[in-house]
Length: 127
Image (cartoon, rainbow, N blue to C red; front, side):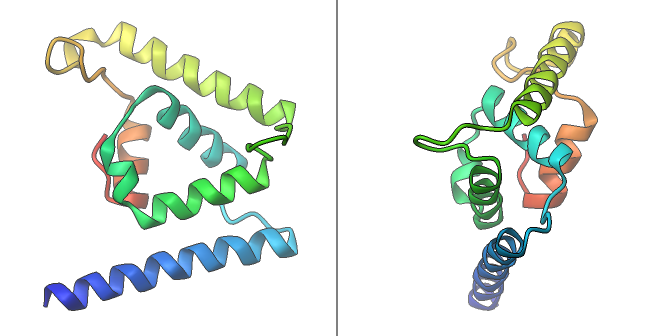
């Protein structure tokens, strides 16, 4: 049973990666610009080792990097960068105003519900 689940997971991760690549090639969005900005904002502020173990997350990060030219000599789109920065500020402000929700003396700052639900639903990651 475990092997079956593992194979299904690998298949779905590979499918997601290929779907994202196909969308890039034909110029249609696999993820909305808003979703991409939210993902990057959360990753920027919240280090989580689970990110490294999610194939779906890795596929989406590859997609975001390629779609918005976030690599090496690439220059990201200014509007997209502004949106990411806006979400970073939103996450920082939420953590400041919800200190009582932080865990382990602030080591894990509070996060808005949209961030928690997005990572749980899209990647099965608890942030």
